[in-house]
Length: 148
Image (cartoon, rainbow, N blue to C red; front, top):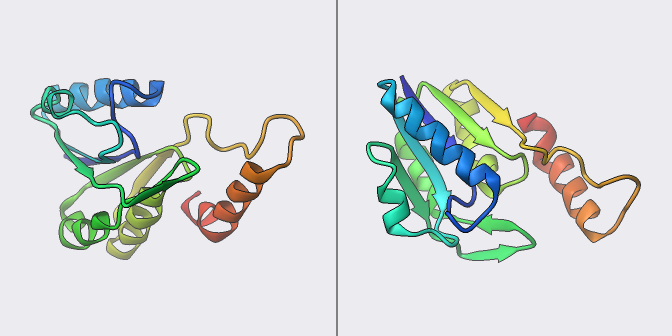
């Protein structure tokens, strides 16, 4: 099975989702699946990504980062060209530019996907409402509800 994982920061220097994805991708590859990861080059290290072999990791260049939102326009061309051969997609965390792009082409090509929010679904803790809450709400209204 050809499996694509999508996460915005695969690095040994970032959060627990990176570690989980690393272990999951390696385990799936050991079971004979063809595993690919689309990520960003944020804090990525070639040696770390190479240690995933035979998993293929594609760290797309960040044009800019805004409040934890990693903009990688090169992922669009990659999705247009190569997403059609994927059997299933595993999206990690809800709110990312990468998920917007991949969801669009998964829908276009009829590729099933799984969304693992890893705790990213709530907009705020308790009743706080501030700038981050507003950004999350805007994302959810614009894209998030469709991805869900």
